Structure formats: C-alpha cells, structure tokens
Amino acid sequence: MTTKSLDSLDIMSAARSNDFFRREVLTGEHEQVVVMTIPARDEIGMETHPDTDQVLVLVEGTAEASLDGRTSRLEAGDLVLVHAGVRHNVTNAGTAPLRLITIYAPPHHRPGTVHRTKAEAEAAEG
Image 1 (cartoon, rainbow, N blue to C red):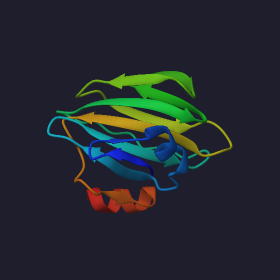
Image 2 (image 1 turned 90 degrees about the vertical axis):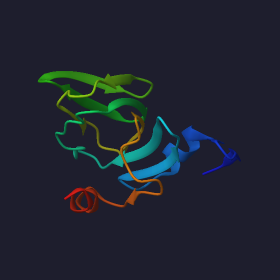
Image 3 (image 1 turned 180 degrees about the horizontal axis):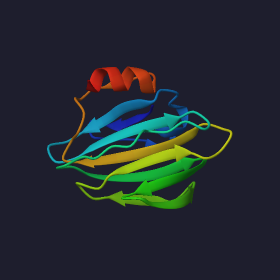
Image 4 (image 1 turned 90 degrees about the horizontal axis):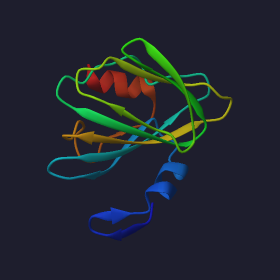
C-alpha cells in the first residue's frame, strides 16, 4: 500500500494487493475506506447497516449484488450505492478473487481493522 500523504493513498494498488477479507485503509470523521477480497464463489454475507450508507466499487472480478431482494450482475469498474437500512449481499460470481473498495459513511469499523477471513470478521462482529 503506497501512502501519498497523511490522508491519501493509491487505493487501486491497495485493493489489488489486498488478500484479506477486510482491511480498513483510511478513516475520517464522516467516512471510511476499506478494501475487501472475496474468494471465488464466496460472499460478504447478507447484512443491513441501519445508520450507514455504503458505496462498493468493484476493482477486479465479477459479482452478484443483492439489494432488498433485487439481484444485479457486476464487473470491474461498477459502483453500487447501498443506502442505510437496505438488506444487501455481494457474492463473488467468478473463479478468481473478487477485489473491491467500500466506503462507509459514517465509519463502520474501528480504524486499523483487519479481518483476514470472513470467519474472523464474523467472530469479531459477534
């Protein structure tokens, strides 16, 4: 991960080089940037953030996104806005890792959060 200044970094390189399920990379007062890697045929898991909007940007791979029961096929370069309160999931629909950037507003995870696997993330979230 290449940091350009205290509050900037090469986010595409950070996303492409991340092999962990979830890694927080920047947190501000009102937003947070996280990179994620989802193994082939795995998923983030159905979830709802009651008070947090989430923007997902696919960097590498193909996915299916489900938002309140509506499913769409996504590929690298696509962006999805998940409004607070929307039940959602992202599934890796390909055979290679799915790499994405997610932005939460307001921040959703503790600064410095690293979850190496989905199981580790689920255990940490209780």
